[in-house]
Image 1 (cartoon, helix red, strand yellow):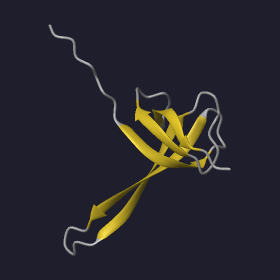
Image 2: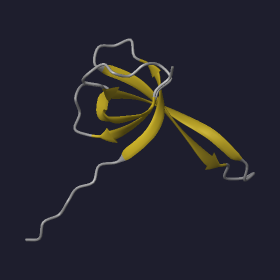
Image 3: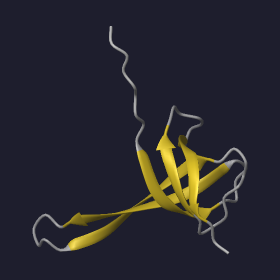
Length: 86
């Protein structure tokens, strides 16, 4: 049996809320093309991510990775803070 490494899905987004304890809300934006007209549109998804140290502030740019479900709404974990807001 060969050794296989499992890579988890990672996304980059902006923190919009850090009001909860050890949880941040991250907005991930993506650009999709309209199926009929071809115009590119901006679509966003709100994701709850686990922040163990409560180190994120609103407006920070972060990288998150998918993990096992940690609660009813959390199945993502904070990997790193890419850009801090002053």
